Every structure is written in C-alpha cells, then in structure tokens.
Length: 222
Picture 1 (cartoon, helix red, strand yellow):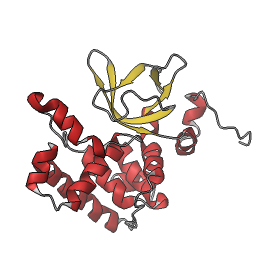
Picture 2: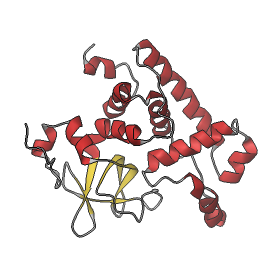
Picture 3: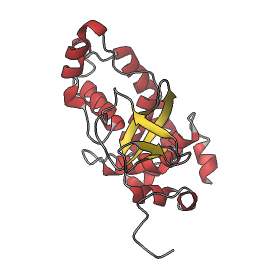
C-alpha cells in the first residue's frame, strides 16, 4: 500500500501518521503510539500558581534531556506503573482525566496498527529509535542552533525559541524537531526533541538539498 494511503488510515496530521509508520522499521511502535497519543491531548500536567515551585520539583524526576516527548513518555510510564493511582496523580500534579483520554487514543491507534500489519514492538529504555522516528515525521519542523546561540527554523529561517516549560529550556542541542509553533511575544517551539542531522537527511534528502543544514553529511556519495 502506498505511503499516502497508509497515512490516511490514521485520524492524525500527516506528520504524526508518518512518525507512526516510521516506527515499523525502527522497532518502537509501542512507544511511538503512546507519544502520538500524548501529543494529541491538552496538557498532561497542571501547575497551580500557589504551588508552582513544588509542582516543578516533584515532576523533575520525569524530565528527559532528550526532549519533551521523552518527558511525556516518562510520565505515562510512571502512571502505568502505579496503575493510574489517583493519589499519585494528585501528588505529581498530573491530570488523570487527560491520561485516560491518552489511553483511549492509544487504543484506537493500536487497533489501526494491527489492521495495517505494523508490528507492535517496544524499544524499552533505548530512546534513540524513538527520536529517529520523530525526525522522520517532523523533519519539516526542524530547527538549528546558530552561531549566536539562538535557533532558526530550517524551513523558513525564522527565529524560534524553546518554551520556558520545555524540558530543553536552557540547553543548546545542535538540532531539534518540534511538534508545533506557538506565536506570542516570541515564536515558541512546543514538544521539542533532540535529533541527529543524519536522520533529517535520511527522512527527506531532496528537501534538505533545498533547505540546507549547516552540518551537511560528510559523505560525498550521492
């Protein structure tokens, strides 16, 4: 079945459908459908103004230096480990209703994967393939660190920055992909993940001939 027709089976934006389909070769479908479900809902966490510092402190253990999608996955796994305990959710400022919605979406995505013969494999703790998958689908949402330590989107060369709530806020990875941009006083990247430039080239070689990355592949073979 052609890629476009496979993507059309998912009730998702094409980029997220592509992420799921990429997980077939990269053996991380279980994690990817969880992440896509997590990206399909509003905030998983809540932070009351009066308990802001406490909420941030108790959730610190979930933060991944690889990005927001991994952080969300860590929260989901912890939720599953305590069987969705309401008191645990309350203590960690996790919106239990939102997690239930995530589980419903995940179930639906899982059923579609079964129908399309996508093997539901797990990569366990190895997150490289998860980030590789995200790069395969979100390559048009890539951003690159500049010499002045700011970020530019690769497609439109516009200045972009990490949202203060991002797990990558204050860090400087060379390349990231984001799920969406939010325009307020600045152009903020939301749901950001650290990626390798070689994955971006692999996802769309022709696209990156036009939208060149500063770190071109070292290989001279076409």
